Image (cartoon, rainbow, N blue to C red; front, side):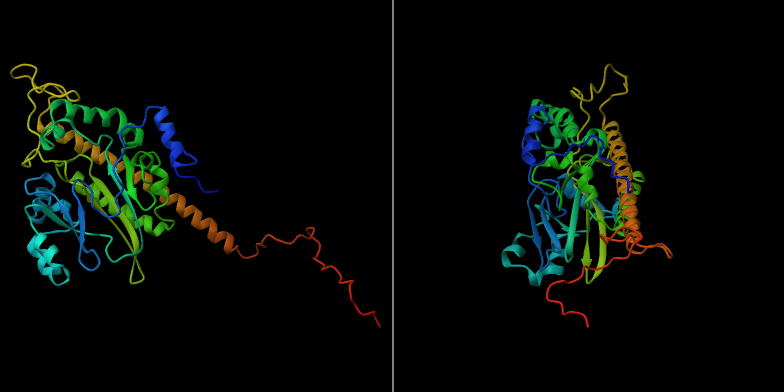
Length: 372
């Protein structure tokens, strides 16, 4: 018998409504989550597919934002480790050259590097596709990052950080699991419920062990890229997809969501700066002149914290995916064995006759001719 996928700390409910009511009773429900995603969009800002098959996604991310600057650096080969594991990105001029004839006048007029980024849609052209969006890390927000990037006051930044620290991250499983599902084909409308059911949603991605083999390899590539870099990721995601293209199975996974990346060596324009007054989660930057306490909130410490959490989250996701792959493999072997018994092994009879006695059909006693 196949071993079921580990769903430790996950709870099954008869319906989403019942799960929501349970979450409210137990104090696990906070504000309503945002709508689910069905393409590799992520982050903040609207998404507009461009091209006949939506080959390129136009996403609102103004010049100077961390996500815009991150993709710009990847194109400039500043982060060579990440080039193979993030969606390809393009300048507005490159989009015009690739898709110009297929774009409407309004779309052509709207191409603007100062307001948008243009990224590859890895679901484009796939038939019968399934997607899975998993957010990596046990902590998916930062007080200082909120304060700096989102122009929040100290109270608003601290409130959001606290909400995630004691509400969203523990309730959805990120805190103990290291990752959570946030969208995809099998995800529901509620991000809270989706996060709580992450293992089950992961297991539904595919029944084919070969798909899992390819997916795990892609996940390992992302983990290796992060380990070989010196970047911290807050609330970045792994977006996975499988489907067919011209009859061939396709499996892909990319790292997405770069609105909250930390590079201490080459800070982004919107990176959090050293916080002299400290934060409710990380403590003071300096206790006294020359002091360097363990919890000093400089950018390097913040980067290290989220880099370690991201790598740990990838390790956890890979372990869970490997467990699912093993379960699917055992199920496949058991199914094959039931359909193809070993030579000399008789198949179990489905007859209603007692074992060891041949089946004898009942005599038709109605309308039969007398024997001669």
